[in-house]
Image (tube, rainbow, N blue to C red; front, top):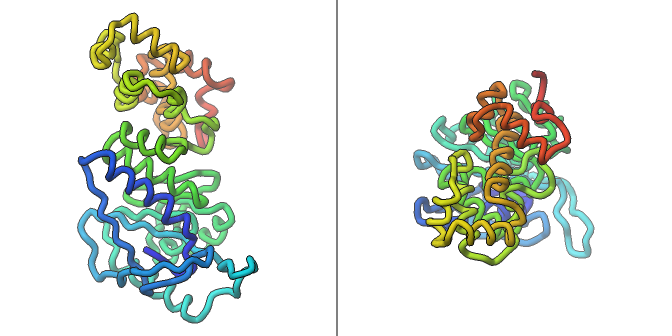
Length: 323
């Protein structure tokens, strides 16, 4: 959904994820349609976009509805901002709110990028839901949707079929998460590598994502093994099985993995498992044993041991909110 004064990166970033995903695999095809209250508009950087279809009366079952954000002022020629919302803009926003109230059904995925959550909030679609938005809009969203649970300091939030991301580039993070959930982490990793972004970041993650750490090399067999491990880090991968998949001897694979990745395949696997555990700790209320089990560790003790190799704090520090 393209609003007036579209923040261009809110659409360009997430949709590049889908474009690249279409090129890399055939399990799912993303058919993108651009709809809005006007057939053309000026974006945040004063670039005009056209070919926008009217807001449809009905949406396909299972459709993903991406709500892009907008800006208060468009950059005009010379670099100075233009005046605030016009009467036409206000009418377009009202049309968007009415459309959301009537067209969105429970089976649809509602995905808001940045301040796009304000449209969902005004339409009442966030009532009873956890959500987030750009940090400068959190207070406004809480006022517009008092029944929603507005979470700050989150890159993205998932609550049922309602997804929301924070500021601008986090729309890429959210779309990578959705792609990974639908068609597998191997494809999400490949898209992230192409876009040169980190994968599956959360508010407390270190700067370098473990899903991309150790990927800065050109050896195809080692990448193939990393793809296999990343497809299911919870699985007990043996060196002999990975070597067979790579077409190498155990010793040769072990040497190549150390040479190109800078760690053993077991350490690499554990890094991904710790990342999964970190997500579970921050996004669920599962106890430590269940978190360890779901992340592929045999016990919480094994999880803590692997965690200490990467973080100076205990796993419980990844919890969000009260214990």
